[in-house]
Image (cartoon, rainbow, N blue to C red; front, side, top):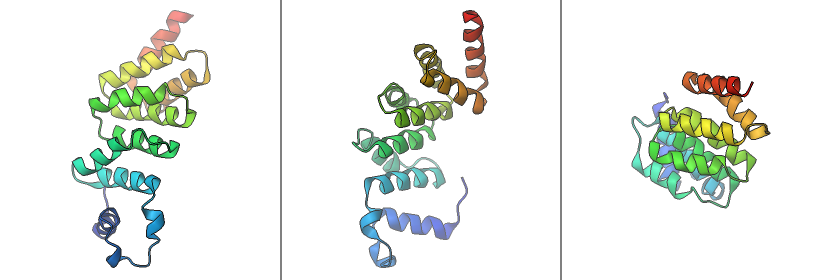
Length: 160
């Protein structure tokens, strides 16, 4: 992801809590967990390479009580494509919150590793016939995850 150096500088100032550089900003709102989680995800995407500081922060927020934070965490972590995050995606995809589950399903498709594809296939099988299973199918087709789509097609053909 490309970024403007000035914008990146401002984002780093926000992350580092450099209030003196931007006294006019609403710092009380900028320190909210949702804002910090989104900022960590954006910073990790625009950095050249994965930055452990941002990944550590995101992983530390994985069990937040705030649904939006959990959804942002799983999406931000998926951009790194790390296999170590696949179990978290699976847990969220099977969880009670439909919003977080859908974010995790999209995240699994972004991970684009064989283990993540297998989790998506397993989720499709587990939730076949209901909304969540249909959403797995929709995401797989929409993101053109060829091997996953082929697996879903074959699974559906076997059911016919």
